[in-house]
Length: 256
Image 1 (cartoon, rainbow, N blue to C red):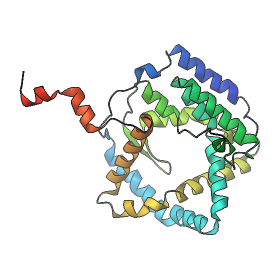
Image 2: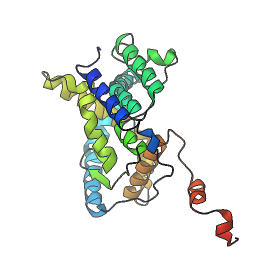
Image 3: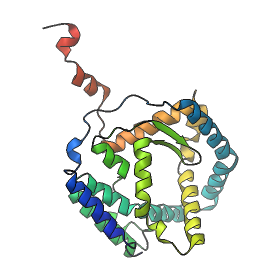
Image 4: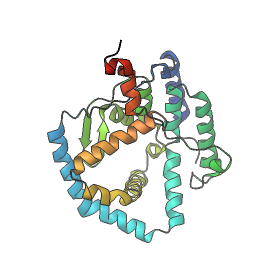
């Protein structure tokens, strides 16, 4: 796969935003955001119930069938292909966060896997020492210090914070799958396969969700924990660290 049309120009534009914004990462949040910030919980719960019923009746059975009939090597190739499609978004997020060395490595990954790796189906770059990174525009906005905003449950698409939802929307023009402008059938087929493959990857956690006392809260907490983990590159601040930022031991004990 060649570099998508206009993708380089789009990434360069994000790089310009990063430079104008003082590399963004200077505003890296120092603490986690423990509050749930779910002012639309009643509506969110109704949408979650709809999503859950649709998943159990349609989506989960399809994903289970896909997992059952697809050989593991083929499923890995499909996963690699879709992971490679996120390359331009990852690169743009790197640039917006001032991670220029990582952006160079991720650019190399995308170009190598898109060509030598046969459209990304084979992760040749990883064998060359170019490890994958999980970056998106929502993380970049978080690194700038932008709050995550309210929790939102969308029909079909699932949970987002407002910050991450806006980031996801702005990332759409960077996705190579959007380049199939003149072939709606191919684009829609890829989007459908992407959704089924992604759902199949979550089958392992279905039992945990089904057995949760409150599945809605379980999913919301899991979403926030995952996003926090990614925002801090796998090393989010602990509650002890946050407590220490606010109070010293002497103040807590009432000592001068």
